[in-house]
Amino acid sequence: MTWAKRALGSEHLAGWAFVAPAVILIGLFGIFPIVWSGVISFQANDLTSPPHGVGFANYRALAKDPAFRTAAKHTLIYTVLFVPISIAGAMAIAVALNRRIRGIRFYRLAVFIPVVTSTVATGIVFLWLLDPTFGLVNWILHGLGLPQQKFLQDPNQALYCIVAMTVWSWLGFDVIIYLAALQGIPRDLLEAAEIDGASKWSSFRTIVVPLLGPATLFLTVWSTINALQLFDEIYVTTRGGPLSSTTVIVYYLYQQAFQFFNGGYGAAIAYVLFVAILIVTVIQLWVGNRRVHYSS
Amino acid sequence: MTTEPLLGVPPQQFRLDPPPEEPRRRRLPFSPWHLALMPIAAVMLLPLVWMVAVSLETDAQSHAFPPLLFPKSFQFENYKTAFNAVPFAHFFLNSLLYSLTTVAGNLLFCSLAAYAFARMRFRGSNILFVVFLATLMVPFQVLIIPTFLIVKHLGMVDSVGGLIVPNLCNAFGIFLLRQFFRTLPIELEEAARIDGTSRLGILFKIVLPLSLPALATLGIIQFMWSWNDFLWPLIIINSDTHAPLQLGLSMFQGAHAQHWNLLMAATVMSQLPMLIVFLFAQRWFVQSLAFSGMKQ
Image (cartoon, rainbow over all chains, first blue to last red):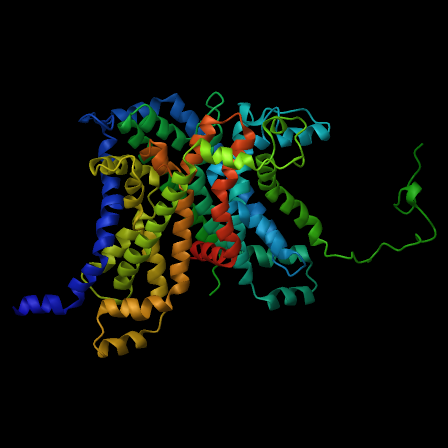
């Protein structure tokens, strides 16, 4: 009795009651699948019939799979281009937007709108903009006297078109983060630098950029994680083509697991991606935290 | 003819008299930042403006080269045709159901768990919180195959329920709300406890009314996420009557890839609800995104 009373009277039970729905939902859909995914990666599993264990066969096959290697290479090229371009672009635009001039609300709106545009809509619109025969971009090139391009239909250009398209759709989010960080830079710091005769450019380089460090680190980690998981835009525009030139890791995973029903192989790809993301994130945070200074 | 420039100035530009209108230090009638921001805004808005323009053209006009800069006559019936070509009304309702239930689920379950983590001392709370946070590191691709199998076991493949259930509670929301709850003054809650208010009563009558900014942030982010979600619907939904909007749009694209005007009309319709919400609540969106970025 006293034990039961103590248990009920204490906050232990109440606390667990409060977190119970979260424990069930996150446990079932957030934690249990991590373990199960690991198990599946050691199975031949077509997502329907009873699976059987195959040991490390999926991982061994993965190590020798030229298609996976190509997908990893495309993912890497995409990430290496997308992350710095979007972050540098966003920083420049945020600095430009961080002032009170007429029409600034319009400019901000223009930069933010792609953030709420869905990836599917973005893909469809860019398919049209980059259409080799009827597209707007080729028409502009034509007007400038430049040769017509095949863009998403050219194996040598498609991945770069995807970079451009995703930069367009992600830029606004990065700009929002930078604008918020810019608000935190004290005005007197910049004014003091100006009084001391620092040029606009040098005070940008020596004051603004370092103070934006935490935001840059966050965006680097966040954009890298997202870039390594690129999927929607590929599915809508190129389906990995032409000639597999835009097949990235997650698209390859999707094909293996949900089109060819190689669930075990798909799970192995997912785990390799997971470990890769963890390693890259840890390295970025480790390098970043040594270089970024957090002001109190 | 090559002559040495005089005083470092090319000869044809060298004059003894200063030019009639001294350009040096002459202020522009507008801020020079407009010169940078105007093209940026144009590039960001162009795809969306063109999307609307093409959606109002005839089929022949949308396949014209050069592309029409402005539709000659407004073909509003494109919208009607596109709306009736696929079950668009279903897409809207499915997306609305998916978004609103996941927002409601996250607000409720995350609030309960976050309050327990913020204010209640119960055995295992620290470990549980760390485990929840760790799930944020796991990319969705790792979870996707087992989650598909779980939803299949629950008999919810190809149903809106199967979309909703795995997304009812997210560790991100718990973390976000817990951080906010901890900033609230504890004295109010202590006073209410002395008056005999239950924990649940305190949460709903005192804490949540004070936490509207954090709840709005979580609600907006979850709404955007569900509304624009693509990969998960792509995997579990097969029939068009159960498809949410983005998947429905992609299905429409597959069926009407050659009719650019109809495809753009469908795209405009699919983006309009979110765009309208964004235009009216832009400040909230921007704050929410900035907040989510800073805290992650």
